[in-house]
Image 1 (tube, one colour):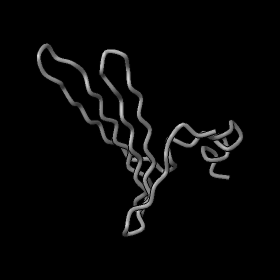
Image 2: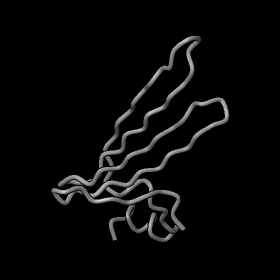
Image 3: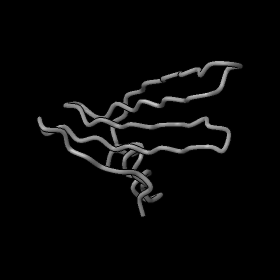
Image 4: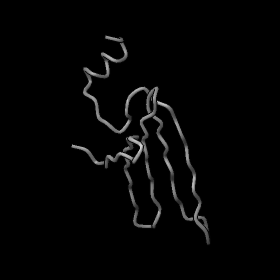
Length: 82
């Protein structure tokens, strides 16, 4: 079961997007992009700051797609390099 959407751009790059909206209008958007040596994860938070909106983006690099759930056995195998 996935709670994200997968898309492919015109140049063949794959991206996965997950968005969570809250009742107060704030949101968290997670975008994972497949790159040549792994995945780049961008998490953007949108929060109300008095009269304006504040956007914060944090990017990180991963070996595996962080939006795809792995079983415990798969996680152990990747740690042990099996």
